[in-house]
Image 1 (tube, rainbow, N blue to C red):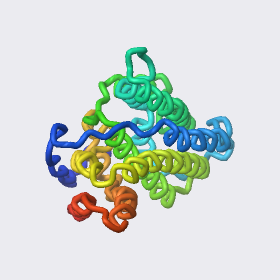
Image 2 (cartoon, rainbow, N blue to C red; image 1 turned 90 degrees about the vertical axis):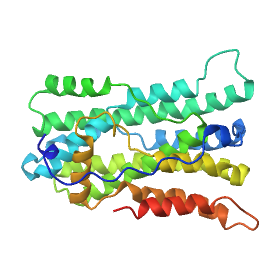
Image 3 (cartoon, rainbow, N blue to C red; image 1 turned 45 degrees about the vertical axis):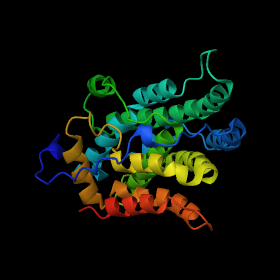
Length: 303
């Protein structure tokens, strides 16, 4: 890939996490009714805004309007979106909705998460399918079977995240979904090919809806547990990596070159988390959130 041959320095690694799982006060699952109140409307909104790759006007495709940057970015985001089987498997393993031996409150919480996970996964799979079709239709990929094989090699790699608590998982996904939304919006601002523009708008809208649901879940913990959430939030911010950062061949150079060209920085997504924490910190008598805000600010100022 041409974008892997640049000499730009890779971005610095985030600082290691402070503390350990053993030092955190345990947080109970959110009440299932709280989760259901967030998940139900999110699933309904997804159904109301559903779309399929066939809905795009493929007759308007103008491949000659694609730049080398456009082609590179489409290849990159196709790999990212196509990793959804591993991501979903990780979520269902961490928050299983099966097993009669489980605590019934935890089971009910996982069952509510499942309702959204399957909707979310279907929408992300739609992104992967549309991007794969776009690569073939636009000539970015010369052969569909070769493309599918290339995607399968990456998708088959193990996907893992270092989080075992719902608050950590949803804080991570909140940042990741916002970062992806911002990337699509920044990319859209440079694209002139009409079908790709339409596709980026649709995908950005989906990512914004996913971000909104995960924000509600994280807010539920912050509102209930206050300062007790700080160690969990700090762990995620200090260890955050975008999906595939450690598995996709050439990820760091590829993503860094795209980010530089598009004036994009995934750390902008930390501001969304900072706003949630800020709302809590600003409440009378609140404590424990300032150090998280300081960590977010420090990461945001890395060169």
